[in-house]
Length: 478
Image (cartoon, rainbow, N blue to C red):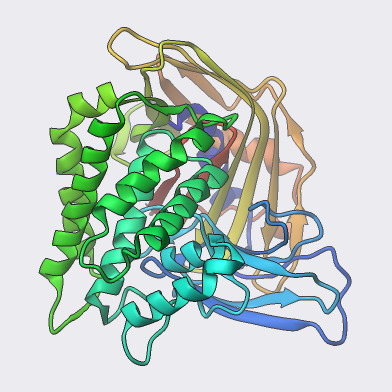
């Protein structure tokens, strides 16, 4: 799946630890001149607390990306943001959270939204932000009731929250994760699904009814025509009846897992709970694999495993990357073993793919963001539904944006492809870390060029322009 493209960023990110000396985990940036009456917005990004998320004040009409006239910041280790500066001349906006890692599950965080003024950005505030103004107050009232006395629609759903409130939160999360695995990975397309869920819950008056399985399944089917119009997402429903059954079964399994964890009418999210939810949902999908493949056509790209190698091509560590900590002693190369799926019956080319990788040094709170643009990806179809993915970076550009702990920042000049820092053969991508350092050595100021690989890092990857599933890696280098 998200293999080769992601590779350049993971390599760059690994190189960020080596090349960039001091990045801070926060820091708001905006091209709008500061004003005396600027305000600072604070809040939290919560599935579990999400570390390393980029929080954007996205000017309306929202496009869910950071534009040059918009302000942003990153969340800290607690999922909080405290320095999102809104200039006095700023227009109306919605809060957008992109990237980061759910610190409880260890999984990449979903893209999420919240209306301006919300105290948290969560899956349920996402539904509210996507709901038309005419229906929004009614939805908020229903969610406030679901949250229980003293709580509201934007309450933290991960700590001591009402059972039904957590159930709906987890149902939204797992439905979007399920769709991402089917190739619905674009931020805008995920919000299409979330918007359909909100609309269907309102139409069915389903919130607080005991189960939302049918409403959510109907919503996913209702979103299919809009997804089919996407330039990136390759997803269509061949058998709606069979697909509705699978989605409803996934939702019901999530509901049961959360209810089983409730104590005294409330639920606190733990790693064990998130694991049980994932296992329950995965079991439904695995049991329905044949049915599911016959019910939909899709393309999805991702990484199966990652290996860390030394100078002699010897494996130092081999792990499945998502949600685990990889320890590397003398790693100088990273090998990604790719997994690509295509049952659409056609080769698909993506010609303007962008990748964004953020790295947080968890020890010193340094951060850096790597931006790869204009990459080309081709996904061929094999008879068994597997696929061969090829990547062309001849026209791609790579830049690095970083900030140190006192707010100093740099942006490298764009490095143009083709890049000689990796080789791609048979769905495997091999990256050379030393070459990454060389690539950026003359691109950064001296005070950012200290070499220091030792430490604990959180890497998160998001992509636009190809169905590449988001990835997260907790990486310890010693």
